[in-house]
Length: 549
Image (cartoon, rainbow, N blue to C red; front, side, top):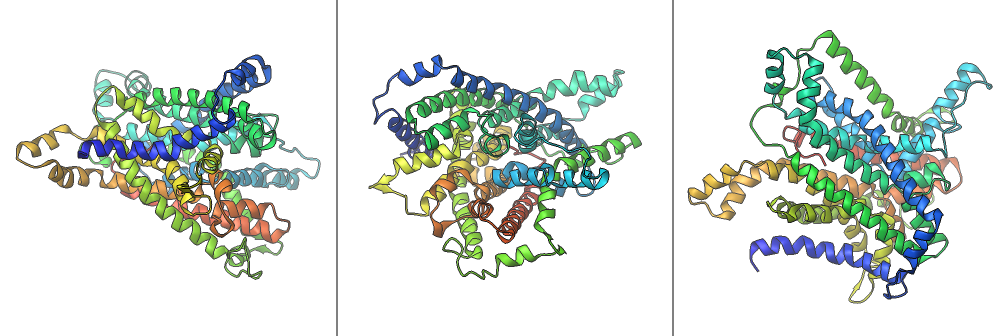
């Protein structure tokens, strides 16, 4: 088998065995052991409830996308066109919501806006017991806020990466012709940015369309999306045939959206040049620019306030502020914590994340090279390889239990089942960070090396690896952070001895007592700290902001 065929066969085999096969297995089980019929689809089309769930999922995703763009575009402008102290750390923090487990972010919103949250407590102290109260739990408002909170970093990273690499000569030429700043933006900058904006908008729409944890935890059962409906039909009502039909409908929608995304994202490829970032970022700002920067930074702090509220609760005790909840994680007075100590739970997450990162890097890098090849099939393959990122982790975990429950592949009692599931969810991030660099790589570099007699292997080692090294480091950091925070599939697949941090947080929150809640908050804060450090490293490794999603 040639190297080219192995490059294609490897990631496709991984995807087929560990993603497509479990989906086929669960759908076959849903339709009675493989006898596919149209009765479930006829029932869907004839039932106004299920049609309503499809329509609700579509329009809530559309509104969530618009709100996310409104929130994300000003922040993208800030990071693309301005340089200021603390920019690296602040940009790393913007990605935290996208990586954090649903249960952690839900706790952050409750800590901030819940009945006993910081905002309502502050209003009560300010206006007395009869003062204004904010009641947005179990409403559409909190769903939209949470979706924008989760996904705005997608807009920030994709758009700011493209925006920061636009040549300043375009604006300078327009200014020389008499155009003002607003006119230059509307007629020159915005048309150039549209591919990146559309690319980020489609990806945000897909994540809002497949939203599960946000709707289930914060919205309540009255706001059931397709994802929540599939979960309830499978776990609570055992209507597997209807759940399977809805899963097919969701997969078709998702694949079509991803197909459009991959074609749009290809148009937003950034040509790699050697112009330093300092040429583009503004260091000498007017007072107006300074006020804009200060205003956007202040708004960004407000956006991150749910996570700040979570940290405040983690260090709060009845006697004031202390690190009691954190020290309790390492004392383990009971001698048992789901059959493992909290330290062992943390170690489980770290070692599983390391193993998942290795697999995700191998599969993601090979897939990125396959997709980067010019041709009509590249968009189809791109959308296909992205599917694990947007298919429900709960559905994926259930498929693993159904498909890998007997020899020769029986993974139910093995830690490998967690590592493989995490790798499936993580490798699309490797593709997204590496693909823009591969597409933007100047072809004349490899052509010149080949003309001078360099073999393909030497071209790869001496030309390509130095260019893609930083993107590989960014992809590895993404994969590690995603594995550390994965919750949906782990909740179904984990055994007590393999408990990870997100599962431990969920179980601690379900236990009575302030000590358990305090430990859950402390673990959530530690997880945030690990992810934040990873993304600070990303900003150090990234070349000219290339390699977002």
